[in-house]
Each structure stands twice: as C-alpha cells, then as structure tokens.
Image 1 (tube, one colour):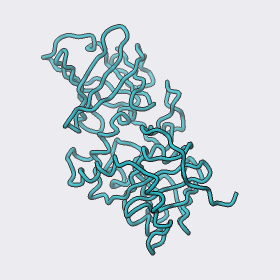
Image 2 (cartoon, one colour):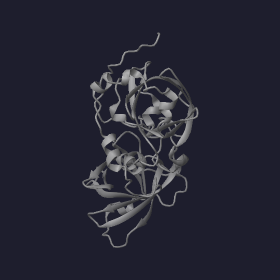
Image 3 (cartoon, rainbow, N blue to C red):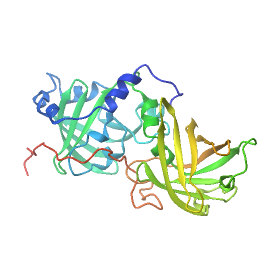
Image 4 (tube, rainbow, N blue to C red):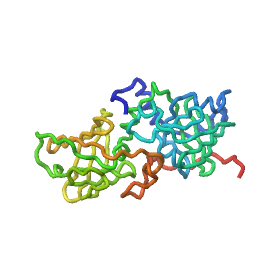
Length: 318
C-alpha cells in the first residue's frame, strides 16, 4: 500500500468504483468496436483496469478475475494486483505477472499461469469501460480503465480491508498500551482471519512467542465483522464475536502493510498486531495451491450485489 494519502483522483475513483451497471449501457456498447483502434491498443490505453466485481453479470465465475483487484495488459503479459499488501508498490503498481494474452478481432485469449486458457469476447462500453464476456460460463466482468498516477490505491485498499486481514496466516500481538484497564482480551496474543467475505471466521490464541504460524494452538473460533465509520475512510470497526462473553469491539486502523492498531474503547487499551506468514494469492488458494486452512470457501472477492442473468448471447461456434 502506498503512503497513506488521498489522491487527487479520489472523488472520481470513488464514483466510478460504486457506479451501477444497467442493461441500457450494454445496448449502447459502440457495436463492439473500439472506435477505430485495435483491441491491443484499447487494452493498452490504460495502465490499470479495475475489476468492478459488483457489476458482474451471469451465473459463473472466472477464478483469476474473481480475485483480482486490477489487471494490466502489457506487451503480451497479464499483470494483476491480487493482494492488498503491496498495493500501489508491487510491480511498480501493476502487481505480479500472472500469465500471457493474445488480442485479436475483439477476442481476448488469456493463458493464466495456474488457471490455464480462458477466452473472452471484449465489448467497449464507454471511454474507459470494457466488458469481458466468457462464452463458456455465460458471465461478464466489467473493467474500468485508469492510469497509475490517478488511480486511488488507498480507496481500493480501505474499501476492501477485510481481505487485507486475510493475507497473513496469523496476526501476533506485539504491543499493548499501559494506560488501559485490564480486560479479557489482554490474554489473547494471536488472531487469524479466514476467507469467506466481509463477515467471516476468526480464530484467537493465548499462545506466546510462537515462531511459526502453523504451530499456533487456536483456543477459540468465532465470527468477525468489519464495518465503516462515517466520514473517515481510514478508520474501520472490527467486532470479534466471543460466545462466552460480550463481543469485543475495536476501532481498526492500519499502520503499514504488516501492522494494524486495535483500539478497545471499553478499556481504552491500544493493541498493535503484526502480520506473520504473508500469503501471496495467485488464485482462489494460497501460494502453494491449497485451500486456506479452516475454511470451506477459498479466498476470492465476494460480489455484494444480487446475481443477475447475463443478456449477452454466445455467438461463438459451439
């Protein structure tokens, strides 16, 4: 994540990231022609293509699109920002190399390093929006184009912060303020946030000084939720649901890509947690291709809008 700041493009980015898709836009899609330029030129006209997961139409999923925040198409290589750790700095802002592509006659063929061959019909919706239609699962993803200099990395980071918590195998408590009142949470030394959306599973442990996350004994498993605070993009709420006493409520802020601060209002205690065991996502699993331990749902971005039928018709030869 870049140094915390509000980029000049925040207002524009926020508007585009939250804009709603309508079928009328599809009808007026420039007749699938990129205004006299080739598909390669169209893909290269923006450095970053933001994947607006909430605009997705159709019943299926394309794995590498389901986890990517941005895609870039550069000289035959596909780059993706799959993680929030390092967003804005990894690969100069482009992310990591995830495969290769061919672009011709408004068809995009992607050869993903893990997911293999994927093909799409490409439709230009407006000046900075394209639709990638996968004819084999009848699903469309909508991508919005930006240059790196005007892309609001901070907005994307904080709007999706629940995924950031899932990008480490464990969070170790490394600081507790001395001024707060004693409370039950003082005994908890490790936290883990498992994949599955905004309201997901967490685990906590009272172990001390465990060097390898796999060796942590998890004392408790519960549900957590991340919420917004009005008029403050950089501050979130974190609620940990413990059955045996009241929920633990915190104000969550990010110090850097590996440290978070949890302020506990009821005791006025400040805790800092440091991420251990970074997980670089290449698909809907961890870097070794395994599903995330303790979860039936592998890591992927979750569509918050209702699923809708795709009005596109498959024009490919069967």
